[in-house]
Length: 273
Image 1 (cartoon, rainbow, N blue to C red):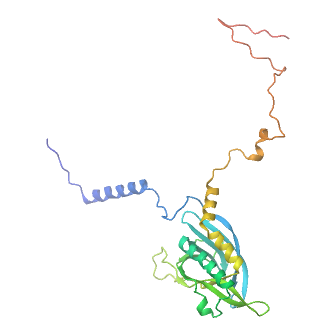
Image 2 (cartoon, rainbow, N blue to C red):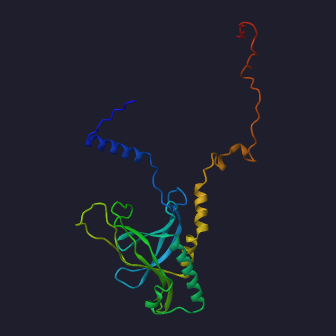
Image 3 (cartoon, helix red, strand yellow):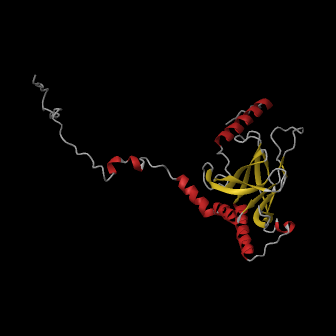
């Protein structure tokens, strides 16, 4: 048996290769984050009050911060406005575990009255994490957002209260960090840097966030949101109510009963005027 071989031109080979590449891309499933615990949109966990340093001041102001959990990347994030920017501060599982352990150590040191008043020694006494932060100048849109991975110091600090007495706060200190390269490919684009942000927690506030970070709490949220909605809401299940008996089917004299089929041929229907 004889076979004929045809020599393809380079242009044909390139075209065939491109078609094969596009076909493989169409058939490939979308890439998933290896840390994903559920294919769900972010869910709001709750809020926590956190103290921030005022702009051009060392005094503190309290802000209510919303906390969310993103099951697709297994990360909790805090969203807040700092100075003129809107920030998302992400906490993956290793960093959440470090935060919870640090809060426990802080409470133990507090109860033992073993806290150090020198900030340079206490601000990173419970360790350091490599975080992830996203920020933008727009409050409700992240079309111009930037992403960076700053170091986060975990410790505590003393601040003077309104009466001038020193008060300890559990703290996280997010250091400055250069933003990741954007997709413009331009070397002339301005280099963005995340701000240095220190967040101050009372013991109760730190405990609240630690409870939000707990894996059992997060997995409970995932189970609740993954449940399919009921077909019939309980309030609308009318005839299952103890106060509403089911209706009884009765014959209605206003309508004639259906006639039985007559066997063997058509039968006339008599009507009374």
